[in-house]
Length: 151
Image 1 (cartoon, helix red, strand yellow):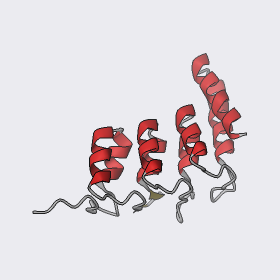
Image 2 (cartoon, one colour):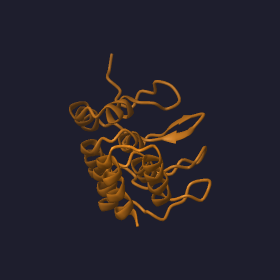
Image 3 (cartoon, rainbow, N blue to C red):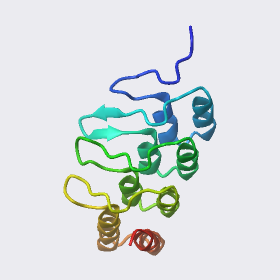
Image 4 (cartoon, helix red, strand yellow):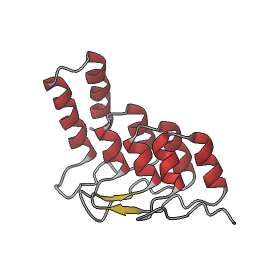
């Protein structure tokens, strides 16, 4: 039996997406070295995701660096659902490291989702929720830095 790094586990989901989501750097490296498609698209009821979108959504900066170096499309935008980009996912997570890595890799901060919102809009929204819900000051400070990066 031959190992297929691009095996479809349902709706396009691959081992690379799983490793990217989990931040498993060793597995991401193994899969990339084995020929995993860095821009493979998973489609579900919520929209579409790539390994980079998973890494951004789950706050995995090391994996983001690996995937962008391997040619991941930093501006991939789902054609269905909310039409989110990896930068929007990172902004929702208010992860300064992930946002900076994506911007440094050339992510377009001007892209808009299906409702016309940008990554900046998401960062503002999540910061406002943090203040309203009286989150820890360090969380609000982290969100302020993300807002500044995206402005």
